[in-house]
Amino acid sequence: IREGCYKGGAKSQTYSMNIKSMEHTEQESFQQTTECKEIAKLRYKIEAKNSELKQGYGYELAWEYKVPQ
Image (cartoon, rainbow, N blue to C red; front, side, top):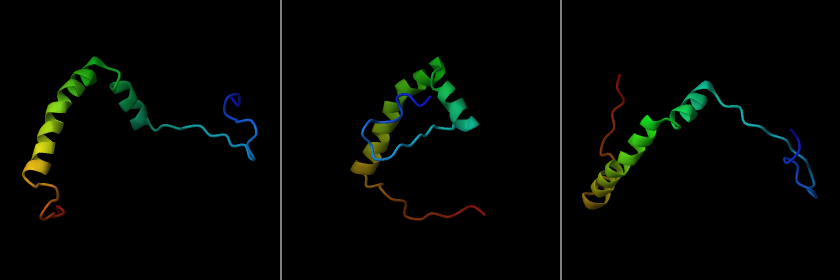
């Protein structure tokens, strides 16, 4: 496993590996499905409308935020 992790000539050697939680693993597998890819194709429309609201109408910040109790 060490091959490719250590860089030659470095003053110190470190080894790290990512440990993904179950949620990350599930999300990663969902992103490979055709359903997710179809949703991603439509996302640009939503982002364009959000941009219009923020820039064109000044909805950059919320005026008031109440925490539900």
